Every structure is written in structure tokens, then in C-alpha cells.
Image (cartoon, rainbow, N blue to C red; front, side, top):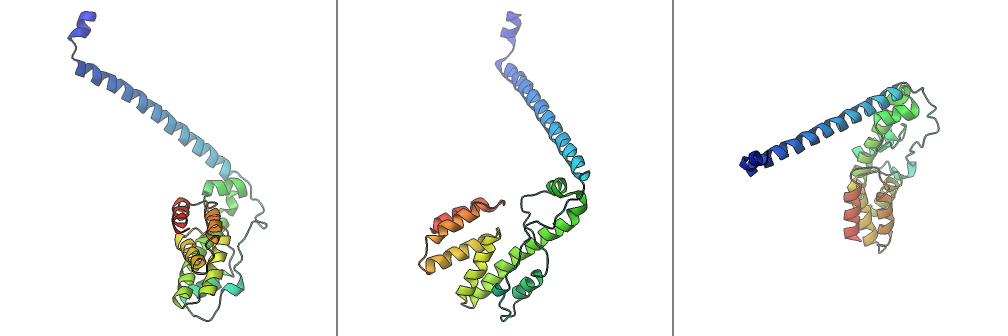
Amino acid sequence: MDQILRNVPILTICIIAFLVVLNIRIRKSNRQQQNAEEAFWERENRANATRKQDVSNLPYITIPKEIILSNIGTDSEKKLSNLSEKQILNLTGLTNTDLKLEYGVANLEFLSSCDEHFTELVTALTDYSKDLLDRDMNNEARSVLEYAVSVQADAKPLYIRLAKLYLESGTPEKIDDLITAADQLHSLSKTSIVADLKSLR
């Protein structure tokens, strides 16, 4: 046996060892994937069997009338006004399965609609703050931006614009509050927002 092994090229031994290790890793990965899929479908089945829950006391977002000036006539202003009549929820970070497990499958369509309204709200606030800044209405823009942060809007321009207004007004220490707020976001953009705010501080 030793004689046979001595006659086998080292390269061949390395290839065989590599293939053995590769096979073990592939089998392990396949098992992990299978386990993950089984866990997903088990959770999904439980979610689809969850009874409808009361959603009347969820933290619905209210748009203050005072931040909508109703006098600059932009599309963003009109959009905000329309959204103020709708039910809005920030459900960022929650999957459909999460929502069904928590509130029942019968509420999914309604909750998804509320979440879509939040996405529209973030876009409208981003556009509206720019419209105000373009008109040198900095105080009004600041109110809009601070409101956006308070409802955990996750668009980077909102935070950067507000930080710059704080710098211009001589209150750079307020950027620390923005960093704290951004760090609480349940969004993929959180890290980038925090990093850019720290660079402005």
C-alpha cells in the first residue's frame, strides 16, 4: 500500500482531497438550503392560518396640516395633501409573512396598501422639501424635514438636507440627534445615511 501511495503523483492526491472536501461542502450547503426552505414553508403555512387581528390601534401616521402650505402649487404639495386623507403605516423591514403571522392573512392587502402609502409619503416629502428649498423657504423646509425624520422616512436626501440646514443655522450639535434617529431605521440605507451624516458633523 505504501508503495502504491509513493507512486501516486502529489497533484493527483491534492485533486482527490479537493474533490472530497468540495463534495462535503456541497452536501452541507444542500442540507442547509433544504432546512431553510422547510423552515420558510412551515412559517408561511402558520402565517396563512393566522386569524384576522384587530389593526385599529396600530401607529398610523398623521400628516400635520401645518406642514402643507397649500400655496406653492407643486405636484409634491398636492401629493402630500392627498396622502393626508389616507391611512399610512411604516412597515419597513417586515415581510408579508411577518405581517400575516402578526395580523392575519385577511389584513395583508390593507396593510400592504398602508405601507405603499408610506413609500409615497417618503417620496413626496423628499420632493416637497426640495421645492421649498428651491424657493429659499428654509424654515418651512426644516419643518418638513424634521417631520420626515420623526416618522422614520429612510430617504438619504431628507437627512442630508436637514443636516445642512442645521449647519447653516449654527446648530451642528443637532446632527448628533439625526445620527441617532437614522441609526434606528429598519432600512438597508441606514448605514449609508449614518456615514454621510458623520462626515458632515
